[in-house]
Length: 356
Ligand SMILES: *Cc1c(COP(=O)(O)O)cnc(C)c1O
Image: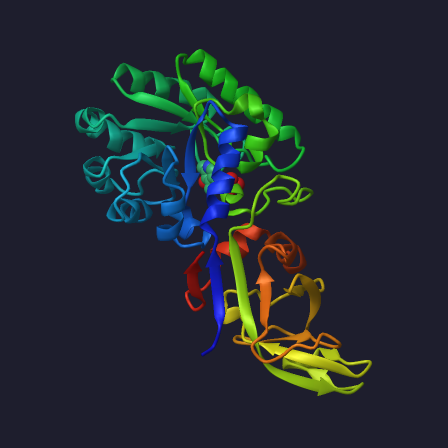
């Protein structure tokens, strides 16, 4: 049987959740499980993250999946609802919304009594300079004051555009957030994703929203998961299905992009972009075998790759780690010109998932 396997380490997930608790001991934890728990599989991840105070998702469908799996914690729709008809479902299922523009505010106000009667908070999004979603600073105070006057419990929400880096916009975003929070006091607040949880301990406030750190990948370009004391949750493996010896001048794979300059042994591994392994590598990529790294040779195909097995004594069936504890996903992402987030979310349904 073709082996392409995604192992999900639930102890690592719990360890990373505990890291959030250590770093933000006074805040409630909204574990971000959007996009199928960053590609890890929502069901297994919810079980490991059941001690979270709440969950955050990007749309109603994702929230309903959490309810169907039997979890009763608060859920926040971080982009709110997308049409008026979703409001009734939200109320029936005890799901909290963000409001980021006037139509959402109108839909909420039209259902005021039922929403408040359920004890649901409303998250009000500040656009402090990222310019994706939210009310600007000159209107958000009126929005919040109106909601409070109508009897809603509000949480001021904001998202950093550069929490992973030094950037002048960070200070503007912080100042605007603090201004709204003060001027509309008392008001709960939430502005920290994973990077900001590490970087701004003074800004944890009422709710932190960790995502990538829970899964044991780094939000920072210049810090590894080891630096952050996080454990990789996903290990992605496949097996050697053929061994070839090639001579100098011979080519490998589609496009014949690789030419051997010496006698080499290649191992063909049963993994490809059909499994979610990326195809384009502007920089040399590697895999790990028993903790030792070796090069990927030639182009990634839909179902197979070739790796340099020269001198490694590999056999048919040898397990190869595409990413995991030895070959960090962040390093694969770097060679691929992207970030760990994208590789995780792009996992295909083909690899077999196993909980460990
Ligand atoms: C996805 C998301 C997060 C989590 O971000 P990470 O960088 O993965 O920690 C937090 N808040 C909002 C609004 C998000 O969309």
